[in-house]
Length: 222
Image: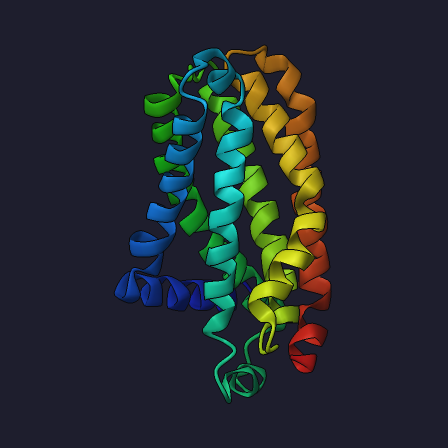
């Protein structure tokens, strides 16, 4: 299963390395979102700094929608779902590979956006270890949810509008926990972020388990 996961993740990342969709489209879009918020709240720097965690995760969420849609657009081409089913790859390995590939792209993007909030919002990252841990936990959860619902929407005529409708309600608890954890790590009390970090880990574990258990069924129905 893990070998299959690495094969799928490597394939997706190699495709991304050749096409550079994340670099040329998703990353500029996410940075532009941060810039728009900076311009909108520029007159009140205190409010801008206080809103940094929420604005950061809104930008990540919007970029994640594009990344997940891209990941499953590759699998929606005629014949590809059948090829995946007949490839002999473990369905759980396909799911985990997709999650890993999306997570790597999002973590790279979050590093860029983290630099952006420091420069644009004058944010003080007082607890970098908490912020990194929260980002990893939230990213794994986000990628797991995205890949689970992404296979549901793949191949549908309304996939581009259906996926956000499925994802946004499911991601609300994760975004709340990620924002609160970042609040504790940005000009806050780091110890207060530990319970939110625990919630992020629980959320990610739950959706990873659900994906491993059900992805084969969802792939058969795709």
